[in-house]
Image (cartoon, rainbow, N blue to C red; front, side, top):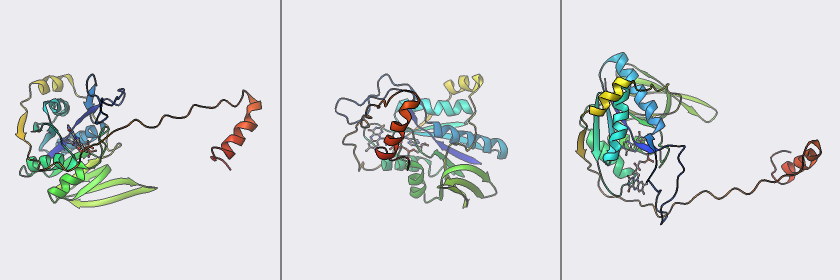
Length: 249
Ligand SMILES: Cc1cc2nc3c(=O)[nH]c(=O)nc-3n(C[C@H](O)[C@H](O)[C@H](O)COP(=O)(O)OP(=O)(O)OC[C@H]3O[C@@H](n4cnc5c(N)ncnc54)[C@H](O)[C@@H]3O)c2cc1C
């Protein structure tokens, strides 16, 4: 089985995010960057499938040289190959997806795994876009997967329940939390990943058609209200919950 895993670095979710001077993006200096958490589920699923069925896993990242770190993290987990689709400057989702699709279209992948979202730009777009550009089926937010001979069965949560789908392969799968328990890289894997040859291809992306105009912080939460202390405060608290917050009847 020949499997690709698309990966991207994101700021550590524990990091304090600040906007840059003209609020056109975030201040990236001094941030700690980690592999997008959903890409860890994607990578784990790909590696487990190859362990079971044989084959190879190729990690693919689109971006500048900094994204090599994302590739090395997946190689440390056990991926066989790493490809950087190199791009600089302004990009949007469609341009990223086109660059990735062009880079992988002739590599004969049976499965292409992505995270279902990133924890920074969070557009949930790349997996479905890559699938569309490659004219492949796509199952999103998958939390259980079984792969057969040329077909797969995937389960995903939907509002109030779950849905099971069958799809033909090749197929794009976007990984949701719960799909598996991602492994920690072993020391040997980390050492090997440091020396791993990264294949670099130039991005073929086309025009950039969206541009971020401004970003802003969420509105500040109003200050809390202290209605009193002890049991005497309960009637007033209940009144406020009923009449002001309207959260009880
Ligand atoms: C208007 C606009 C301007 C932008 N300008 C820039 C810019 O100047 N410079 C810049 O670096 N970025 C820029 N970006 C962000 C960049 O285009 C994102 O990488 C891309 O939009 C992916 O979106 P996302 O992170 O929301 O991915 P999602 O669709 O939420 O990610 C889902 C999954 O897709 C895969 N994936 C996502 N991105 C990549 C990637 N780059 N390589 C491999 N796999 C990936 C991962 O598996 C991920 O889990 C811009 C985005 C927008 C919308």
